[in-house]
Image (cartoon, rainbow, N blue to C red):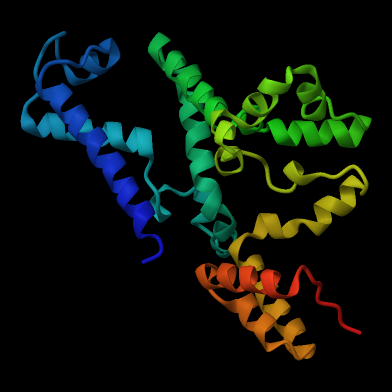
Length: 266
């Protein structure tokens, strides 16, 4: 139920693109030479219903990708260890698919493919700022760790006029106080969260939960609940294991009523 809004948005996106592609195919408005050559049509040629439907399906799969077990990397499907690691891939599949699409656009696409890549990257920057550029935050973190200088974040901000700082770093939505760059940017696990006051090796070894994914998050919730029970804090224990929609409400009420506190076992 909680995922219904996202499901409806995904369906709308796929159906609208499929309809547009189908109409273009039926109306003879497909102009890409490689596509026409593959199908065996001349410019202006109209596809029949079956061919137009297959064309629309291919367009939708290329643009919105195919999710599920059948489209996972082979290493995550063939072995027991791969199946275990596949949980860590759950929220990385979009990143993998998009990077694969960009690679195809740059290496195998024509002029229009390279333009599509540029438009895609510019859209990410417009919505999320420089921080949404793939691997930008990781590169900034590595530079801070190696050289102690924050040239890609603090340095860039200080070099910009005051009115442009938030727009450049966080995108157009920052004008109204909204930042969505964290939702659309693509970073490598662990490396995007490097801090300068801790050694690189200790941070990588201590952040394996980012690689393991959902199972690690569930284990953390369980251990938080156990710690709360040991302190006799039933409310905090229930908050730890509650579904996110309820946990957020419970956390908000606790912070309003008690303020920020930490669970310490003595």
